[in-house]
Image 1 (cartoon, rainbow, N blue to C red):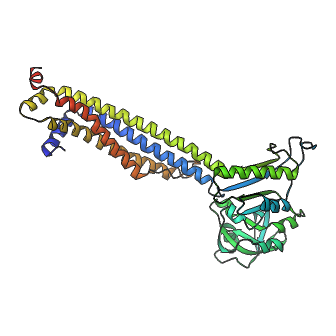
Image 2 (image 1 turned 120 degrees about the vertical axis):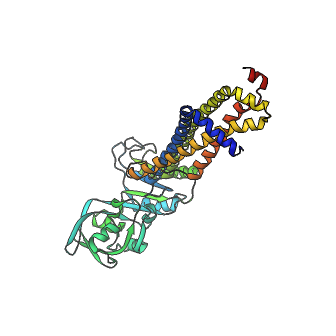
Image 3 (image 1 turned 60 degrees about the vertical axis):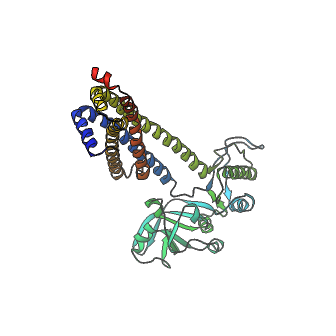
Length: 409
């Protein structure tokens, strides 16, 4: 490493070529800035994609049904496929890998809900106890629906925290009653949900109670269930088994997607993750390419500097300077330029990412962009190493200068 006198000499050399040094440092700083910003944007995109899955269990399959569009087994198209409680029970018995399962009964439209003098419209859904695990529902007071509620068709409800706050303020609503379309329901639980304000304005009642009120005994609009720790291939096998099972029960073609479709959330999540792997690779390729351009610039500048100082280097060698001292001067100059510029680019890049994180809070698919600081510091250290290598080859050329030829020139 160069001593104090050598450092003073390096800084003096840099000051004599201010414009050249500034432009070289700018190219390196810009490369580091671009790498940091791209890494931050990549992390923001990844966080945004994960945020879209925040509300639903990733390891889950969702069964949707509609109308048939293909003739099958002697039946024409246009037939509505209707799920029932029997399908729910059959899936629980016969489809492997089912962990927590629930049906859904949509009570279409917002229902008027009242409590005393207060009233407002909220979304009401019929569900099974397993619904708590499909929607990542967190019970903050009381309890969720249980099997007894389902079996006895109880008029009970679990309400979102926004509903509880509207009707009851800060007091606990457990044991209180809400009137939903003229029927009184006892509040047995309050839940939180990471899905946002819309999820907190929902009310869940036993699915059998919802079927009774709508005079549709046994009818289900949707079935979904979690599949535990099954991997991607296992989830695909379970989804295929479910499709063929429901198709056989209802006499529809397994290829008739509008009639029946299984949404594999784990497959969708893995597909998005694979996209982000390629995005990360692309970010690093672009960022490193930009940095290499700056490093090449440093190397070229060092070559020019060595050529300009050939006579000076010859005099040094004639006075007894060792090749190592010559190399340390050139490499030291390269390290100082790349290290300082790289650090400035790192700091400014982090500033830009933090500024974006503050003002782009609600931008879809770009949530909380940030920079992995250890990774960024590692990149800076690698940059400095590359800067040393960029200066080494011109320095080695300088160390080989023949003093007589240099003085003659």
